[in-house]
Length: 56
Image (cartoon, rainbow, N blue to C red; front, side, top):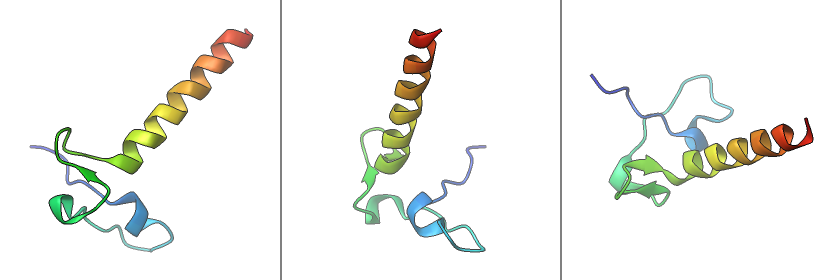
């Protein structure tokens, strides 16, 4: 069973999480079935990890 996709933008600052509206959302990428905000955040985290590894 696939996890229920949560909208990071609409859920921020709320007590309750908001379910992703997928195709009805401008941030949803149909080709990868993923939120663009999630992709950008994941890339940023990976870049930070790579920079930290270079310094060691």
